[in-house]
Image (cartoon, rainbow, N blue to C red; front, side, top):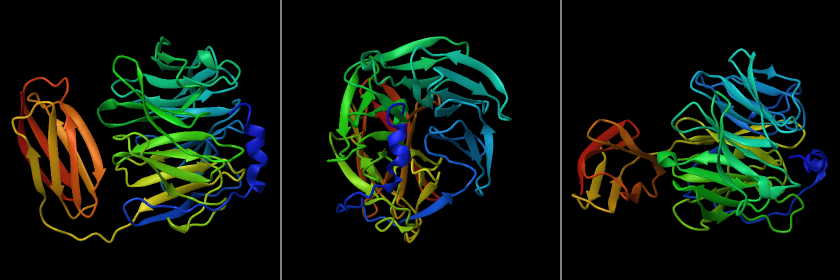
Length: 389
């Protein structure tokens, strides 16, 4: 960000202290280096286009890079002043937040500039809107934190402020959970909030960074039921359970480094941008280390293979809350609920614990009537008709 970019550029000489790491769920994750190019320094936000190409910004520089699924890198656009957040619309147009330029730029898939939107402030984090071709962005002004906002930008240039000021000092990280719940990470205070339907912010968790000279929560991502947040100076990635308050654990990292391999042994250098692939089983992490690495955290195999799913959904009819119990050999369980018109009203992907998922769906505000609950795990599916009253 504006006031710490110089600090972070020289911070590669810093080596943090070791901290005991408690890995979630005992799952098999492997860390590898996806990008290590002398010609492309990706140190900030990440975004995928519809073809699976990964785009990364160089906040300490002036460019946005494109990386193919096979790892080939090219310069997508250049000549920017601290490019920060990235977001695609449904036409594969890329929006780029130019932090120091106080503008958001829209480019087509070939990198041609389509439009520039002046922003009152310093645009930082960005994410595609959940149900439209708008984009959600934050502003991050270290000198006037009270005016920092979370806002929605439409293609015609209209800006709708969703929230401004406290309790967030400097919002940067943005991520969507199930049903379009928007989560916001506070860069300075390392707090995470969810934005409610009435525009209020609900506290979720604080990510720790004890006794650190760059204790900032860079970006957040959502995958398979959890939020993931990167903390620069901790050289760590944290996992946050959004269904509880302050349920936070170290997911990856320890001291400064670039060691690949099993998650428990891998090290990172100032992890910054973070994003999950479409299925949620792989995380990509950029590093503000001065060398532009992108690391890849992928969950491995080793799962048993059964032929069916055991599903119990109760009570049925239900009101207020629907309880879910799923037994499956696959580590992923996806829950989707459709209304009687076939419209998707709920979607969530979870990781099982010892092949068992116990969860619930909040039915507050749902219309009375018939719904279909569809459960997918690996190559297997099952469904139940649910009555909400």
